[in-house]
Length: 127
Image (cartoon, rainbow, N blue to C red):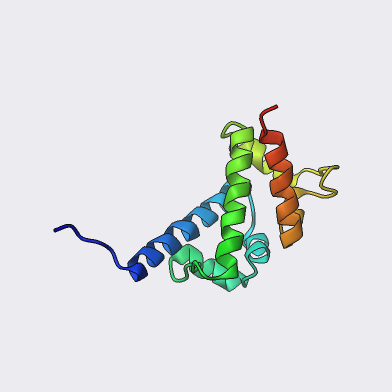
């Protein structure tokens, strides 16, 4: 007989994976704890607890949804720059005329986060 994890165990695993991925994505994008807290809509102390493993974003929460979107930004940008972390950080910190600001500033609102995703998706699209 094989072991089948419970729904609670699967949810906890998903929370741990997304929490770790969003922290790694933010780090690779050069985002500060303050910026990450603004993106996810949580306090800076909560970000600190996330880094210590004392807080996980839960699947049914708004911060989980926003975390997944930020991970998507990272994955899209990483594909565009070919894994060059320096280029990704530079892009996040550079003025973007199409977005009307630095991407790191735009992603602190939901509409800005969606605009950055749409911009990156348009750059990745096969023509």
